[in-house]
Amino acid sequence: MGKHTKKFNAAIKTITAERGRDYGHPASTFDNIAVLQLVVKRCPDPRIRHALEMICVKMIRLTVRPDHLDSIIDIAGYAKTMAEILDHDDDDNDPKEAV
Image (cartoon, rainbow, N blue to C red; front, side, top):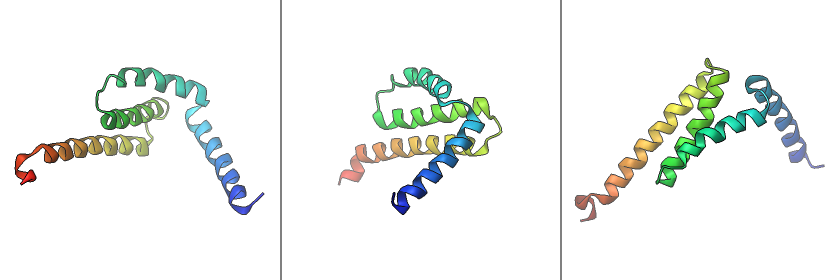
């Protein structure tokens, strides 16, 4: 086994153990995420839908660890990217920009 694979295996073992301690078994977490994402699938914009799907992941994590500030910050970041996408679309449709 190569050095990169060894490093990868060690890292994945550590992160899997940490996530398991923080959020429980992935089966129940993924089941809960899937339920939220069923509603999100209605969003017609695939870019916005992706951001909403990522927010679903963070929301489920927060139901287990409501004090996990990184997930709260991540949600804010995904919300900001949605606003940036909307701004980008507005700029693309602005006739003044086309000149």
